Length: 197
Image (cartoon, rainbow, N blue to C red; front, top):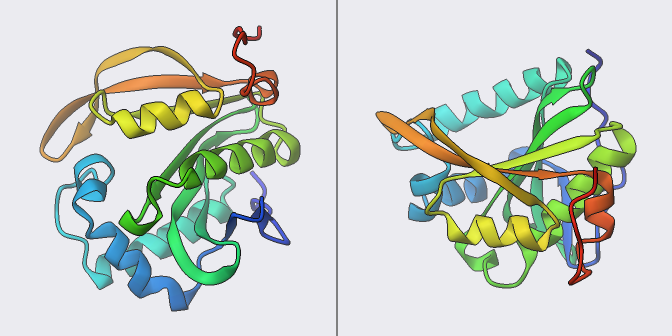
């Protein structure tokens, strides 16, 4: 698989911007990973995130981008590109099947202002337009109600619950599966929208 392209200029809707992570972001990213909500829903090992582990994680993300498997971006304030609000990614990219997953996390100060929905819509449109993805998946824990609302506002459709789907913090966890097709994103704001085929 080819190296994944990087959005240049950064993806933006003039409220949020999505750009590559930078070395200067390390402290803000580490603070985000230490947030209890991040640890509860996102960090699967359950172990504290140290600077050394975060640096390893960053190196792994770059290897995944080079293999065409994942693109990780920082979510930043569009008016102040050094202010990190969270992170997002297109991952599990399968260009042969034209399928991928989309994920995100937000720091506490970025929550409650629509940043997650804006991020998911920007990233989804980029995946459809640039990567030629035909199906995006978004997954979350059954008790992650905020992510479920983001999925719905972004046009994703709930397909079901995958029981005991993944190892998570020393056990196994059920996972809710949502999907988005290109037409769903365009129709996300219509109150009468129906799933596209």
